[in-house]
Structures are given as structure tokens and as C-alpha cells.
Length: 461
Image 1: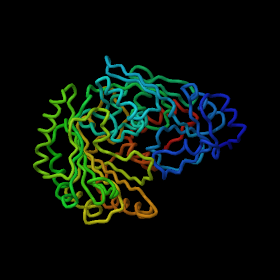
Image 2: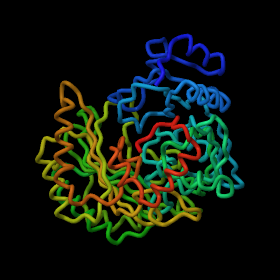
Image 3: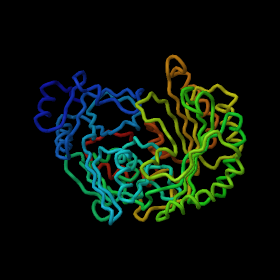
């Protein structure tokens, strides 16, 4: 890889309207900082295009100077060292157009869900999002996108309708069900090595409201309620979405901080329903759970406007230091729950902020009308382990050891596949064997070779 000198970088500056920062220059540090403060991101230069033409210029320049290009918006998926090449930040591509009549929206690649949802809600629409509102919409959909409404409405990528992409030659391609169809298939779940998405059109469900929120249980109830949740989810309909998380939050967090608590997430979705119908239907389906689980220490369930979907999981918004490990699981049982609680139950002083189990199934596993490359859909549960290391309370080594101990003890439940968005930065072995079926992996390899024959967009293959 060629060394980037200041005169070479100046050449790029003459080709684009946006910003170019070499390592060590003013503005560089602010642009490379992402969601995870522990991600060692120090590329040779960071480029912030002003528009699609700038993206083309940056990619062509990188190809001519033997540099790899690494597109990024928020850095939620940045878990590996990046100490070379070009970090291409899409943060200035922020246009948004909502077509309420067609229930769709077109957006620039620099928007997060928190930027999109208020405008959709204003037009009587919702979206199939991830659980965190600060995640970039393009990055989530490129990996598939599992969120708080998935059992009812499917993957976020199921709702994508078209993309504009700058390929490895710097040309703009349009991918849709009728144009560049292999690329359209790959962009919904293939995640990496497929160019720089500059614009995306997505269909919107007519769900301006849902019935959802969180039910929190104290430390003394964690064991009983966690086992009860596993029994309860065996019989719920696809209109109900739920997950659980054992949380250990700082003492300054009102009501639920200072000790272990169990957070049960709940969302009931019925497109086209009034708020009264949502409340009635959602509460009727929740009544059995309330009777089974007993009193809460905090209950936030109610009618939620679509721009407040992030409150269901209430995930930290960052930037924060994060150690994270996730897996997709085959069917779990009560032995699994006991094993997990032996590490993070109320009786343990675990240095982990969140240990979460999500229920999959329903519309997540159904193939969309236009098939996609998404992997990991068939696994019925997911597991996420998250810690926030600090020198004073829980050093990195302690957090990592606690997370790895859980990983090792539940390895027997690990599924055949895992979705890319949950694999952190996957190892070469995981990339080859667990993210997609062999057939999908081979097809993705061919699509990547077609759109990026010279390997400008580095990935894990």
C-alpha cells in the first residue's frame, strides 16, 4: 500500500468539495471517533464527502493510489483495528424525502434512525429499525437489521427498495428488484465489499404508533422471571415482540441503577390500528405475562409514537467504551438460563452492563418478496454480552474474561449461522463459514468481484 504524503493528499483536496484530513491534522481526531471509544481507528486519512460526486472522486483517487476504502457513518460496527487506508465518512449525505402516498422514503447515507423517525411519524408512517436510534440506517440494512418489531414486520432490509452505490471504479450503480439485481440481493445482508451506498429508498409500514416499552424486575426476581419468560415466549403470536436483558447500571440511574435488574422489552404492532386499538390489543396480550411475572419496579409500557421506538430497549447512545460479544443460538432451554444466571444472576458481581436474549422467528425467518443475502435468520434466539470497561471499576481484561467465560459455557447452543451485524468484526473463519450459507457466500464473492474487481473495499474474505 502506497504511503500517503501531504502533496498526494493535496491532490485529493483539489478533486472534491468535502473535507480531507491526514493522520495528525486538525479535524482528524473528531472525524475518526465513533460510537465505540475502544475501537482503534487510525487510518492514514479520513475523507468526508459533501455529495455523491465527492464519493466518486475519493474512490477513484484511492484506486489510483493503491489505498483501501472503508465506508462508515457512526462506527457502531467498528470493532477491529483500522490503521491504514481511507476512512470514508458519509455523515454529510443527509437528504431525506418522504413519499407518504407511496409509504416510502429516500435518504442519504449520513442519516441515523433518530434523524429519520420523526419525519416519518409526521407523515403517519413508521419504520423497521434496529433497537438503537443512534445507529445509521444504511449500515443496519446492509447487514440485515434485527430490531424491536422484527417478529411482526421482518428484517429492516426486507423493506429496502433501491440503492445508489459507488463501485470500486468510482461509477454510480442503481440496484433494485429490476436493475443490477444481483447487487440488490447482496446489499441486503451482504454488508461489506459492495461499494459505498450514497442513497437508499425504503418502504415504510403504516405504523405511526406501537404499544410497547419496558417492564423492570428487581434482583430478587431475576431467576424466577427469566425462567418464566422462556416459557411465555413459546406461545406468543407474531404480533408480539420481546427480549430480556439483565442490566447492571450506575447508581445514579433512577429506580433501576445500583444493582442487577431484569428488563423485559415488549412491543405490540398492528399496522393501521388506532391508538385505542393498539392499547387494547397490546394490553390483552400482555395480561398473561403480567399475571405470570408479578409486580415490577418500573413499567414504561404504553402507546409509543414511532419516533420513540428507541425507548423500548433504551440502549446507551454513546460514544462509550464497549466490549461486546454476540451469538445466534439454537433453541435454548432452562439449563441454558441456569448457566447464564450462574455468571450474571443477582448473586454474582458480574462486570458486565448488559446480557441480553432476544426471541427471533415470525416474519424474521420468512423470505421477503425479493430474496436477500441476510444470514442467521433461522436461529430462534440471539445472545448479546456487553461491558463498558473502565480503569477504576472494571478493567478491559476483567470484562473480557467475564464475557469469554459466558461464551465458553454456552458454546453448545451456538447456531450454524450468525448475522453479520452481531459478529463484531468476524474472524476469517467466521466470515467463511457462519455468516451465510455456502451458496450465498459463493454468490456474494461473485458480486463483490463484479463491483470491485481491484479490491478497493477491504473486507473479511
